[in-house]
Image (cartoon, rainbow, N blue to C red):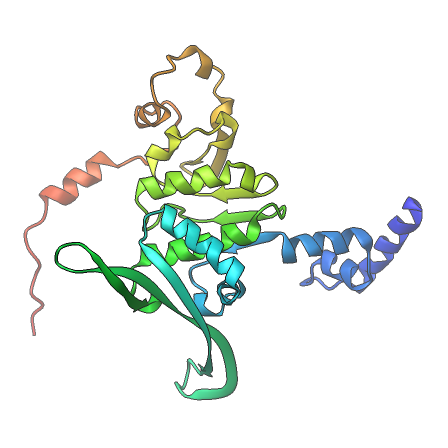
Length: 277
C-alpha cells in the first residue's frame, strides 16, 4: 500500500507546475495525508493579523452568539476594562476600488460593535451605562476584544495560534493575565506562539523550554534558541531574575548600538540647511 501511494505521488509530480505547491496537487487528488495537512492549515492554525479588517473577521461575528459573547465579557471584566456589555450587529459595506476610489457592486457583510461602560455621577455612584463604538475606543481595548474572542473560540480545540508583538498596547499586567490563561487548564490542547519585546515577561511562571530568543547575526540572519539551551542555568542563584540576566547580556539576543556613529550623529548637528532658490 505504501509503495502504491509513493508511485501515485511520483506520478502526480508531472501535473505540478513550478509555481504550484505539490501539497495542493496532492490535496486535489484526495491524498489522505495532504488532506490532513490542509485541514490543519485551514482549521487548526491562526495568525492574528492587525492588517486585516477586524469587522469582517469570522470570530468577531461570533459576538452575535450570546454564550460566546458572555465568555468574552468575562475575560474583559477580569482584565479591568470596565466593559459591562457588548452589542454586535450586522452591517453591509460596499467594497471601494482603491485605484479610482469608487464603490464597487460587491457588498461585504461586517459586524459593527458597541461597547457599554458603567457611568457614574460626581459622587462616584453608578447611574447607568455609556456606549462607545469600537472604532472610537483605544487600540488596547480593541486588541483585547480580539484576543478574548480568539481565546474563547480556541478553548481545547487543539489550535496553534501565532500572535506577533503580543504586548502591543497592553500594560504588562494584562500580558501576565493572558499568559496565565495560555498556561491554564482551559488551554490544555492549544499552543500559543507569541513574540514580545516586554522583558518583564521573562520572569513569568514559564518553563525554560517555553522561552526562546531571536539573535540577529552580522549577516542579518536570525538564530533561534531556547533558554533551556543554557546548561549553566541551574548553577545560578534562583533569586536572580531572567530579565536581569538578559539585560546583563547573558542570553544574547540584544541589539548592538554603534557607539561611534551614535556619537557622531549627536555631536555633528549644526541645523538644517535652507535650500537656495
